[in-house]
Length: 408
Image (tube, rainbow, N blue to C red; front, side, top):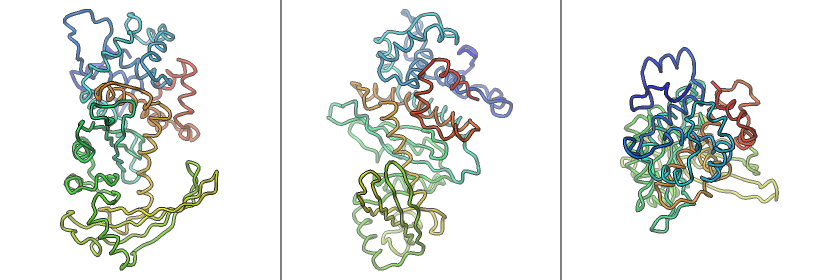
């Protein structure tokens, strides 16, 4: 299916009857949905004037295909396009060759970063609703920020992009860029407004332990589990002092578990926040305190370490496996690590926050593609494959890449 076969009318979702057929009769391939996404990104160029040789959708598709094949910079993407030009043409791409590096630079800086991020959100929601199964339990939405270390702003700081990541499906649902003189505290409420969290569990680090954020999560029908640190000193130290006088309602140990070269055993003590938090009315309702004790042994060196953390949650004290929800928040940190290790995000140097955000959106889509592929596969061995393994496989030939993206 070529790009001309999509009738998008300015939006990604297109004709309702078409999507009903898509949902109930057959699924489109990953490539077809990528083409629909690329066609939906708002055009920023004056198409009625000048010499526009390359359609914006074709440039975006080239960027996605090259990133998925392990290319890092613009020069690598151009070389990828030249090497596979005849095969790319066979997909229905116009016969105008490969865009130059200056064209890619212009496109990366010219695309409306917020507009493309919104289209990514539509793309992500399509697959999230397909992949999320009722048997997965309550969906966990992890929220965290990531610094774009290859870009330095005028104030000397790296631009920060906050993302919402679905643990159950492995897909980045939405992103929001922090303003140059701001931080995650102002971006998280905007991000929460972008997604549906009703009936879901939102996890976040200590920076999100703010009254406005807690109130917004509650008002939208979601639950939360957020780490408690010294950025809320009266609450943190008040809870620590009260814990010395109270026995936990529940306690259990999980592990040992091996991961990332560490053997970790976790002990979790569950307390009723009504007996511990002095200003409970300020936070809008009942809260549960989770005291986490992690004992870790480095497999390579045998070095032993221990760590204590506190978490605050709106979930009832008798919620099963609260400790598992604590650990599942780390999935977004693993996703950020994957962006750096597999897609080399921190090696991409850009001169402005806008120019950094558009490649970030492309990379998050590429990262999600591997979760989508695994989610659509039936073989357990395929579902267990890691991103690095899959990237090595599809980068060996364009045929393998197309076979990967033709998964329905």
